[in-house]
Length: 135
Image (cartoon, rainbow, N blue to C red; front, top):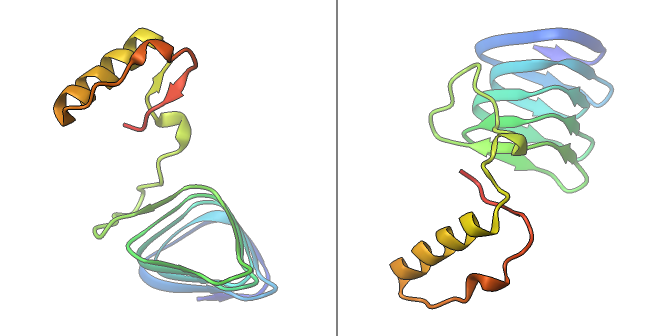
């Protein structure tokens, strides 16, 4: 499917390919086999094979795919998750889903256990700020 106009809603084609031309705008989540983006996408993209962002692409959303290429000049704002076995309806994990460590004691305990595992002796008493640790 090729889009050179404006489309809203949800686009699903399990093994299909979508091409969004330079003048195309999609305000929708996209679930396809492959996506070539040269226009604007406001929504998440799940592609089981690949996503190609051309130099004129503007993507505001998360991408989950097995392979991605981003040309110089393309704009991408969101999270990207790459895995070889992408299933439809899976989305990139936003930062808000990450575990947050707000207590110095928790961070110190984690740092101490990591240090013990690698044989490093780090003084954790200076940790006073909140730290984000991915799951």
